Amino acid sequence: MSKIIIGLVGPMASGKDVVKKYLEEKHNAKSCKFSTIIRDVLDRLGVEKSRENMVNMSTSLRILFGEDLLARVIAKDSLEHDAPIVVIDGVRRNSDIVNLMGLPNFFLISIDADPEVRFKRMVLRNENKGDAEKTFEHFMADHKLETETQIPEVMSEAKFKIDNTEDTFPVLYAKIEKVFEEIKAESAAQHITIE
Image (cartoon, rainbow, N blue to C red):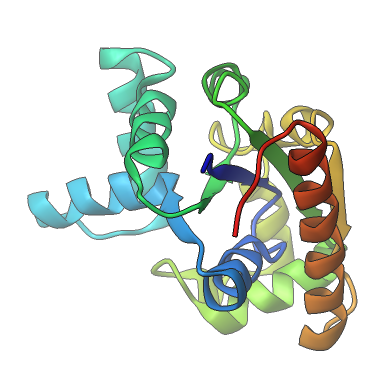
């Protein structure tokens, strides 16, 4: 049985993590997340996991070891997972797409929401140190960080798109399920089956 590999791309706080968790809980997917690699390195070094430190670590690793370093690691990890469905969270660069599009049975989903909605979500979840204190202007300035600038271009490569502006889980879950059914149908059309 061939696996389905789903990449998630979208701006900060668009709902990528919610989509990933839904697919894990509802369809027994396993996941790989780009930022996990960076968080692991920062943890190991005893460095605070602020957005700035994560951006700096990501940039440094890619300068030293190649622009596609993280994408190569994630592609390898996704192929080694024994699950029939693997979700890759945090696709954000053109070099990511080059590596991931070559994976068998890979599908890219774009998730987006209005900036005001995303800002409120980011402040509430406070995932990175300092997020809860940010202003909307600072949040919008973060979109100009090196790690964020290619996201709109990568989103344009996605065949499947989810608008997550409505702030209710049932609405989002219905949209995820619809897209997932389309992905399964496309897999079946390619003579690939999953249970």
